[in-house]
Amino acid sequence: MPKTLFRVYVIELSKKVYSENSRFRAANPQFNGVLECLYVGMTSKDPKERFEQHKSGARSKKGHKLSSNIVQKYGMYLRPSLYQHIDPVASRSEALKIEEGLAHELRRNRYAVWYN
Image (cartoon, rainbow, N blue to C red; front, side):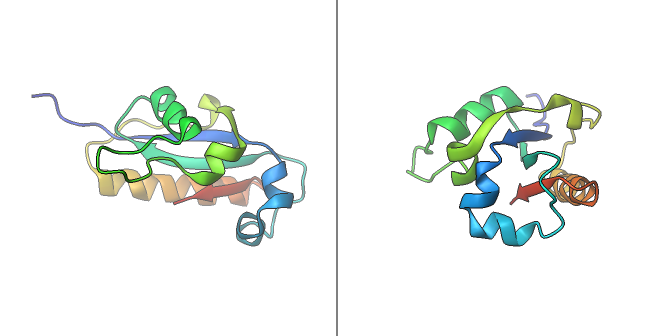
C-alpha cells in the first residue's frame, strides 16, 4: 500500500478578504495592501483537488466541513510558484510545521496570510 504524502499549497485570495474579514485583518497588521492576500494549507490530496473542495464547501461523509470559509468565499486560484519548491512529506505533523513556517515567511515578506 502506497504511503500517504502531505503537500503544502498556497491559494491567492481576493483582497476583499482584508476589508471584509476582521479576523483576517487582525492576523495581518504588517499588510500594506501592495502584495496579495493568501491562504496556506496542507493536504494529502492533489492541491487542485483540495482547492476544489474548498470552493465547493465539501463535507466529509460524517458531515464535517472540509473547506475553509475564507477560501470558499475569497479563494481565486492556486499559486504554485509559492509552494512548488517544497517537497511532499510523509508525516502530517511535519506538513503542519512546514505550513506554519511558510505562512510566517510569507507574512515577513509583507503578504497577508491565513492558515489553520
